[in-house]
Structures are given as C-alpha cells and as structure tokens.
Image (cartoon, rainbow, N blue to C red; front, side):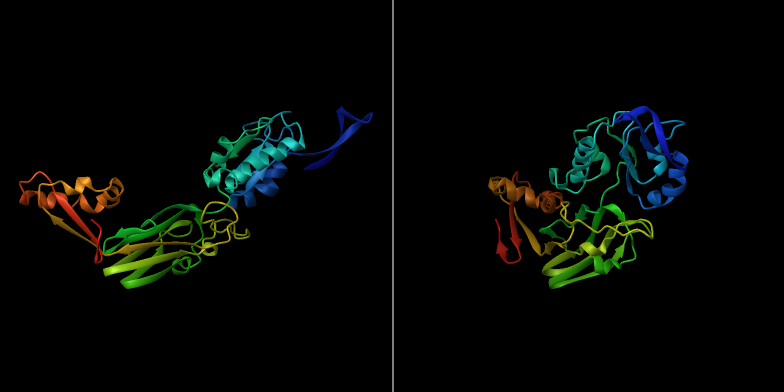
Length: 299
C-alpha cells in the first residue's frame, strides 16, 4: 500500500517532514509482472530503495530485466543520481565509449559510481539490438556456395519476415535463398544460403526497423542500432564477393614469401587448405603462388 506519513525524526523548517511510503508487496503486485515480462530497466531513486529484508528489496520487488538503486542512507542528492544515470545510459546507447559497453552490466562496471549505486538482475540486458557477428564479413571473398548469417546481441520478435529484415542485391551469376530466422519466438539470428558461379558480388542491406526487440505484447519494441551508437534510425550495408581463382606454380624461388604480409594474411585462409594437396607432387622446398581475382592478376 501507499501511505502519506509524517516523520518522527526528519525536521523541515521546524516541523516534522511529510513523506510518501510504499511497501514491497505493493510494488510486486502492481509493477513486477509487466516490468519483468518486458525486460524493463527499473530505477528506484531514493534512500533505502535496495535495502534487503528477507532476501528482497523494494527494487527487486519492482521486477524488470535489470534494476538500479541505493542501499540504506547512501543516496545523497539528485545531482548524483543524474550523474550516475547519465554515465550508465550513455554507455548503453553508445554515446560514451563508442558502443563498447552496451549491456547493463558492462556499462555499470565501466563507469564511476556515486553513493553506492547498485545493480540487480540480468546484467546482459541492452537498450536495443545491435550487431554481434555476421558472415561473410564486409568485403570478404567467398567460395561459390555457402551459408551466411547475421546475428544481433538481443532477442528479437520473429513476426517480421526474415527476407524483409535482410535484403540482397546481386551482381553476376549468384542466387540467395533459404532466408530464415534461426529458431522461433525469441530469435537473434537470420541465416541464408548463396550459390554462384564466376565473379559475383552480393550487397546485404540490414533494415534497422525490421529487427524488433522481444518483450511484452503491450510494450513498444526497440529497433536495431546498426553501428551501436544512438540514434538507431539508419539501415546498414555490407557486401561480399566470389570469383577468386587460385593457381600454383611450383619453383624454388620462394616468391610467395617475398609478397606483402598484408596480402599474405588476406588470402591465407584460401591458400592453406590447398597446399597439402599439391605438396606430394613436388620435392621442391618453396612454392610460388599466383592469385587472380577474376581476370586481374594480383601477384
């Protein structure tokens, strides 16, 4: 219940101060269900908000995905609350530290905290989805056929078709199919297949508004932040190519070793699996490698 009471110990202008009191059970009964279902961020910004009795506090009884508050009398002033909130939320939305600390726990652990600011709950909660990993990587050259994916760091709804969340523009002889959400209900990954011949290029467009965070049916979904830095109002784009032809000319000059380190590393994943196949046919110590991208000789 919520009560309006006069303090016996706090005096304001010579008179006992009035305060509003609310018990933990009221918070649990009125707020816990909807805040927990929607994985909300809960802030209790008062003294004693995270005092534990019987293993729970007012903050934990509010529910939510993750909560923040203060134990005992450690809360001291509204300015400090604002400093704490800004430090936390600007890391979570990428405005501070370039999106490196997007989850609640990472942001909390990498900020300066005032007045014994505390965290409760799931520290992996984010403000909105963002990229976790994807394949092929941007500008990567790939085999003629394969399976790609795009994965975000936050669970999303799967009510938007996967082929609307990811769209593909192709150049050359290549097809994209089997575009699908991996899993059902709470999802965070879209998979797809490509199959091409010769030289080709595939441009992938990631539609930010089609990745909608999972939560309560009454909540407004948060959409994808492609670059992990607010605002989240733009699509993202990357591309991959196919058509690298690799030929080996065997001699004893070690020409490959004289090529640039950067070029060597870029194509190492293509060359290494092939070297064991040709070594049995040569007694020479060195292999000279010629790489062609389409009709263009690179080395």
